[in-house]
Structure formats: C-alpha cells, structure tokens
Length: 68
Ligand code: HEM
Image 1 (cartoon, protein in one colour):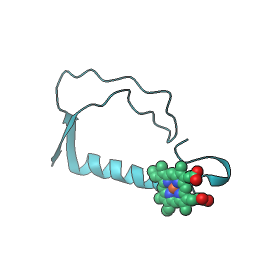
Image 2 (cartoon, rainbow, N blue to C red):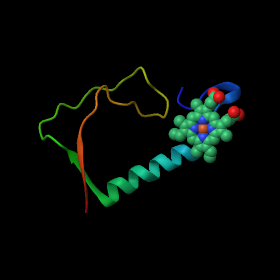
Image 3 (cartoon, rainbow, N blue to C red):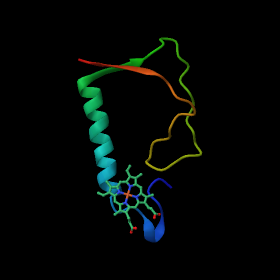
Image 4 (tube, rainbow, N blue to C red):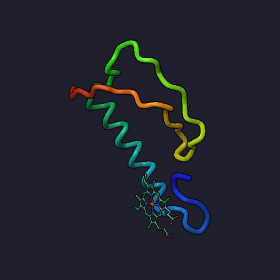
C-alpha cells in the first residue's frame, strides 16, 4: 500500500505520480541510460509489491547514466 489506504490515504498521491513521470521522462530525454554489464539477466517483476502501477524488479540492476 504505497500511498496508504482508507482514511489516511495520501492526499498527495496524484501529484507524486505526476512528479515521478516527469522525473522519468526528464531522465530518458536528457541522459543515456544503459545496463552496466551488456549481458545482464533482466530480473522478473516482484508481484508482491503493487502500488504505483508498476511492479519493481526482484533484484537490483546496475545502470550507467551519461549526460547526452
Ligand atoms: C512517492 C511519494 C509519496 C508517497 C509514497 C506517500 C505516501 C504516503 C502514505 C503511505 C501516507 C499515509 C500515512 C499514514 O497511513 O498515516 C501519506 C500521507 C500523507 N501524504 Fe503522502 N506520499 C507521497 C507524496 C506526497 C506528496 C507529494 C504530498 C503533498 C503534496 C503528500 C502529502 C501527504 C499528507 C498531507 C499526508 C497525511 C494525510 C493524513 O494524515 O490525512 N504525500 N503519504
């Protein structure tokens, strides 16, 4: 329950979701993001943690971020 539930549901959740999308778009537009190791095995989704509509991966993947 990323944003809580019921009476204590986060009132800023819509703003937070838009902010996350803006940050991801800016990251993809202004930076070159690629895997650190070329033949990395992409991990499965962690289906036990739903919340913001996108499931996180089961394990971390190292990436290299370069400015364009
Ligand atoms: C990824 C970003 C965010 C996450 C994961 C998040 C998560 C949460 C959670 C779980 C709660 C409920 C806490 C509880 O059960 O007592 C909460 C409450 C709250 N959040 Fe957020 N939040 C986020 C962003 C924001 C933003 C951007 C704002 C304001 C613009 C905000 C304002 C609030 C407020 C005022 C409460 C208290 C609500 C109440 O007690 O009635 N949050 N948040």
